[in-house]
Amino acid sequence: MKTKTSRQTTPQPSAARPFTYKDRTLHCDQVSLTSLAETHGTPLYVYSATQISERFQLFEQAFQDRPHTVCYAVKANSSLAILRLLGRQGAGFDIVSGGELERVRRAHKPALKKVVFSGVGKQAWEIDDALEANILQFNVESEQELDLLAQRAQALNRRARFALRVNPDVFAETHPYISTGLSEHKFGIDIKAARGLYRRAARSKWLEPYGVSVHIGSQIRKVAPFAAALARVTSLVSELCRDGHSIRAIDAGGGLGIDYSDAPFDAAHQVQLYAAALNKGLVGEQARLLLEPGRFLVAQAGALLTRVLVVKKNGSKTFVITDAAMNDLIRPALYHAHHEIVPVRQPIGKAAQITADIVGPVCESGDFFARDRAIAQVKPGDLVALLDAGAYGMTQSSNYNSRPRPAEILVEGDQATLIRRRETMRDLLAPEIL
Ligand SMILES: *Cc1c(COP(=O)(O)O)cnc(C)c1O
Image (cartoon, rainbow, N blue to C red):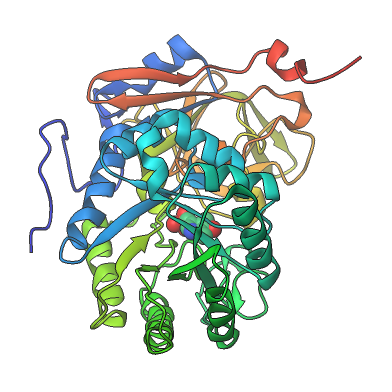
């Protein structure tokens, strides 16, 4: 099996991150973060297009021996420019709202036919919109939703291809907020009830039993739970085929994790292990495999660039206060997630280190990026980068404390493109009525 396509634009194709020091300055690909901060201000999200494409191609290669579609999970990073980048390479998309459907339509219309629609609370207008766009598959999460789907399909005189998202009752060993595959979670339909629902649905002329889907959680670092979940799905698919349904797609969901620490990380190897685990669970299956990776494709391609405003001491503690805050990147506050934080100006030799809390200006004690972290000594005005911020960073940002959201830059080789301008005061107040 081929392990990697070599792309001329990539300096170090196997590096876990596209952020490296050149001339003592942190770069994204060939672009200096100092110059980006000068031109576009901070806080600033910076992504490497090269790495996103490479990660996508790792999936394409690892699954090349079976019919498959990589449906990138839009909620990880829903920037139109990134959706277009992936859409043009043949990606489909996993969406969870009518808003995400609109993004796919704007970014790369031909990809609408490769959209799968997930989510536990789809509304009639969202279903209508997706039926009219003729998306590939609705991932249905309740009996009630199945009824609503039939009703909307009838109203629009269209047949809806659906998969039941089954809950395999598999423990994913991840953070409780991002684990979804246990029967105690709100997601999916009890796998034991699925067969009866397919039988019932098949009687409706508006519903086409098309696939079976599963998604057990996010940031999953071991591949065994994926294999276990898929084995359960495959045995359900055999039963469904015996029941006379023609199941055309098996949707394995997303959830493959990355390493947020500074330990070495071999992305290509991870995808191979993942593919081997899925293939083990899929022995003998002919159906098209749908994959919904989000984080794995975009997390390590991105960093949040921020400037130090204040370094202050309170008693024995040191606080580094940056111009980015929890409203820009909420993962540390929400999941106690770890992000590596590095200075943009590379320290020489064994430069002085400090142990500090790195925090934002928002009026919440939960507004922190790191606690008691050893980092290179920094002073007001210095730039630092929060790494691995490409997934669930900008998409979970808010205007809390009336803070305009950051701008976003997409880098390709030595080219930097502004893909979202910084929000203005006018943007901030635009929807309000006085
Ligand atoms: C969030 C989500 C994904 C993507 O998860 P990652 O951990 O980012 O890969 C895929 N499918 C569904 C249904 C999701 O909810």
